[in-house]
Length: 521
Image (cartoon, rainbow, N blue to C red; front, side):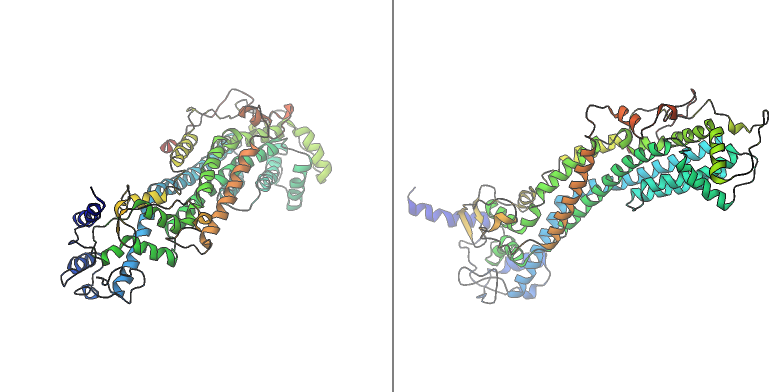
């Protein structure tokens, strides 16, 4: 076919494809009727649509390439608003699955952690009621305060784990002293209570159990808290990018891409894929800068979750805590003779403990059935739920870098860049400009001019950097003792001496704890 034949073919193909009557420019008094009908569907208000083609000298974006247009200035404004709304809706549609995934899991895990804390408190209360009936009711107050502090810490409170454990044992010892070391005597006075609280630390009356608990509770709660913080930040990141306020330049580019063709009567014109990609790279330049940090966020979160077992798993640690508390009290019972003498010396307690051979309260004997945890189900439901979450999150690791493609695909962009809209006219072939993602790469983007990073994006980038640093820090701390199995690390944590008998029972009695979190699996 000759060159002139090819030149004649384009308008004919365009007319057939787009439904335009031969030429691309509006002509005649009826040319704008289809535009009027389409505009009314989009934005009720036919009064703004001219009866026929007008010069369009007042238009700011959809400036007619020829001599006339079907758009008024008011229509252009309405189309501009519609283009921005389109963009917002497409962004929210793109993130819907990911957003639901993170929001749902953040809520489920927070509820699950609260359930674990509640069960751990109940187990500890049950231990006191079962083995130390006389002081059980008063111990409930201290147990309640400890687990309230644990709950608050998980939610972000500044309270120190060491302080909450110390306060628990400081409060518990005067009670243990009056019921187990000096049973039958009046409760200690305020002055005596304060002395006993101080003596508790000086004499290490509970052995190394407090230190062991500090280590295990601190590590497990810190991992849990960072995990929840990361999920909540994930929600914030998605919400931020879902509700971006696009720049004036971006809004104008969206208007040109989606609606300026209407002004020429080309209602069925679709944007060229390469052209759409350029517009999206410009409009989403700041968002696309999140990509690498988002990918790192998911990888770092995976690293944390892989390490959340043993003393880094709050489910394991807290549901076993009653056993450690029981062991601490047993340690006092075993050393009551030495402790009584030392405390009399330190606190000036004049009354000597009466010695009875046949009338010891039952609680003074070391129970041969010390409680210990044996999970009937070896499956860790929280752990499996975390693995499931990470697997799903990894499928969204390229979410931000793929946004331009998603939006263009849902804008019916012409993938082969032939007979498509380039923002000014329908072209036979569009030659795309190659531009990388990110704000720094948009200097040469002639479709959308960048004026600098958006403050809201800069803030969310800083927050992602911070949480990634926290997540990496948690992961690195797990690597400080290479070559050790989690069980070995757990046994060594707290520096328990052999004589402390930390974490071991004195008999074969056992409290079998059923997994109460089955609904999470």
